[in-house]
Image (cartoon, rainbow, N blue to C red; front, side, top):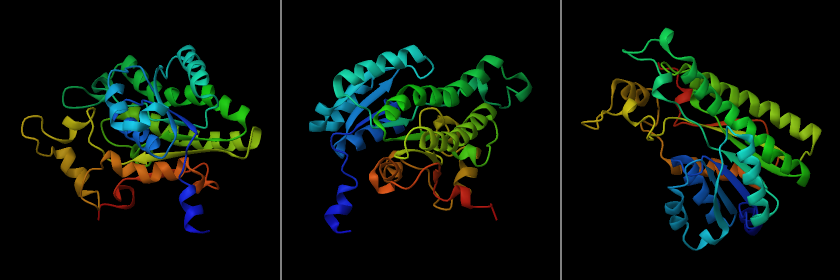
Length: 277
């Protein structure tokens, strides 16, 4: 394979990708990266307020991007979004499920024991991460099946490899995402088209709005005890940045990984490889 052929593997010009949670820190970074390699990009989210900033970041590539309202826990909302996307771009070639997260009411701590976590909080976190991955796969995966090709990329977590303390619902849900990724990869290839691939990435510890003050002190900015423990167990001795995901994400979304399906790739600075001793 010559250089031109190799480079062309990452040229996604004219191919349309839907990113759920597209206005979030990680989803937004993926959206901008896909725009930069020529893709048509759909930023799908319940809150579209940050979308304008992402479109401005894309610069001249923003003409091939669209922000569309969609709730990953509302199938009707997703179907309506799919209709809008079809009118603008036609066939969808890829889905990135970046929507997800945790909430304080589902997190144990000195003032909230596991035994007192509310059913509503647990259900919300579980549904957001697992059902919020499955429903978009149903709606947009059906389009991939009709086209006979495409790629789905789910967002799992380090919690799927090793359940972390304090976040039982989030850990269980992300383990479910990894398992579902394997199941869907087999199902789509066997039942619909061998050219449909399903994979996942498992980010390590990336500082975001949801976990910032679990890992750093709100007043001083210094690492909390939990933050220090994470860094001590990360061989690369730092938190991840959104840009750290892009190489793996673009590989899994591009023809460069044409024979890869059903895997979850850690992007974690070595956290999952380190035993602690």
